[in-house]
Image (cartoon, rainbow, N blue to C red):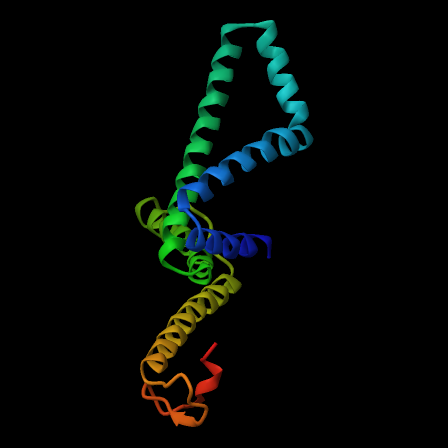
Length: 185
């Protein structure tokens, strides 16, 4: 629920404000929340242990571990920043609904790569998704097609309607009957 709400609010701010300002505020407040609230509560002990070990300079191995942790943190921040920049670009042109439906189809690629891995390295991969995965995948694909076809139908109706008309007309896009005042804000 919160992730979907985040995407809808992001769409609102990206479409109604400056995208660069949105990304800047997201980064600023994300940094404040992460380092002042989230990290001390969830990772406080691990951070204290890492800082204590590094300050004591126990060995060269510890220094390489610390550099490895910094490298992983840098990679995480870079990937997450790239994701949010891409999402803001996507939302400036499209809807949050299609973004969420598209992101829900991501596990499909994990199944495809696992299947390809089984072909090239038989016996190495011993995982196959449960049947409910395929039911969920079918629902996500059906939701995506349903959303896109409804959007096209509404665009088609908008082309053939009069703003003051409140009578029932046959849709030029098909044989279904629509009340025009349902589509006029």
